Length: 597
Image 1 (cartoon, one colour):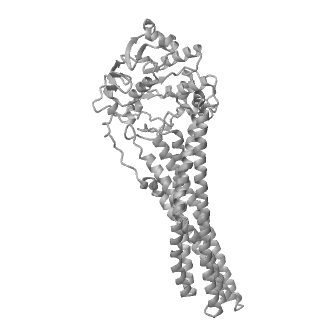
Image 2 (cartoon, one colour; image 1 turned 90 degrees about the vertical axis):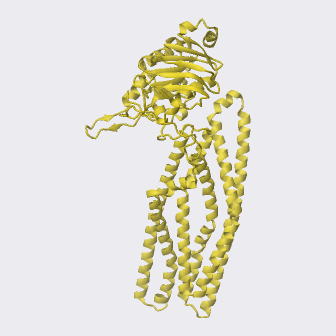
Image 3 (cartoon, rainbow, N blue to C red; image 1 turned 120 degrees about the vertical axis):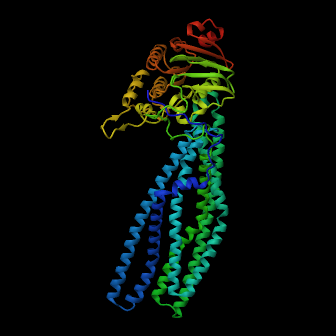
């Protein structure tokens, strides 16, 4: 088997610094995406500037060409208009494509980071619905800042261009717009305060309702078994009503804010047009300049309203940014983790150093007077590889034992060693390369049977010198054969959470996924409970032969599996009370009651 990565010193109790908002923003705005966003914002600014110049050129056309009946001037003005429309169209298309690209790649990068953090052994596990809410709507909202940046930069440029153009036409008109516009923006921003608060509240309520819905559907089978469907439905109905009420309040605020913004913009438009008309009647400006002023006054309504709504947009981004930040700041149970995948393979070519004893086999496990919340002074060592059964009627004890070997269970007293190393002295990569502890209720991922097994294997790598390729297909086929997945083709879709397969098929595919890793130590919990006795015996014997040189620990009460094991441990009330073969332990009353009852 491949060499194991070097052990690393144990991390400090809390090695991770606290994440702030800049961490998530750096994913969106940093590096190449940041440069593309600057280019996209520049395109939007160019689009708005050229669009603001259109009424100016039209007014010039009226004065220089139409009023004088000059065909050459008319042709020149029309050519200039055509050039403006060509530039603004091209700038819009370019900026929209770039902004959309930055948005999608940023959202993907944030989702990857959030989901990668979810794959870490967190000190405070989160429910699937909460993970889905953060990885879905919140990352989209944070990535949406790229639209806010570009559109508001363009709106500011549009207002500045309009104000300068009005100054050229008439200094009083331009100064009036430069003075009134900031006051109007300040007033509309002050009115947006309630909208910001209600928008943030709406997001929180919708996220909570979505998370509850996801968790309810995920645990529907358990809820039915407990007869708690009505209570779950009542809780979701309450959460949904709260989300609806928050959404309606936010919608009313948005409608009121937009109406107020339109009113302010309309009043500004009327004031500018009225003043320009009065100046035209007095002969202080020409007809063409009046046309330019009216066009500019109509044009500034959109950027004025957009800038006034900036506070509400920023409120939504801040709310989601806070949830993403809090999620990424959630401490891990084991410090730094290399990569975010479901499995980290052993690093080929890694040397043994740092005091590793070459005489200790990588499958060697030693529990030295270990105590946890549920286990009491458990001592045991594996003298040889093979299949070891563990019998306990306490699911917490089984989970604690698996967590001990995986290094995720806190140890109150004693030591746990794998391959001669205290698991607490190994980093996450070292532990994952040595031990695979399969959860009691593992799930299948959406995809094919082959994909669900291959997900734990490193990607195929091609040697540039020889042209050879290390394709994991052989490992997948071997694992499926050992788990006796003969009645389902590797390309068969498993459906959501494996719903397209029977219970026995799901269990065998999950077993194949664990076997494909070829870890020195694998811990399985009731891996054959959904199989008939004949299939169970065939699968167990195949697993025993496949992993004859490695250690496989099976937590089970199945007499078929235990009869195949080389060694069996009996846990009672968190203590190791007996050990031996299945046949030897049948004389033990507690063992016989647990296995044959």
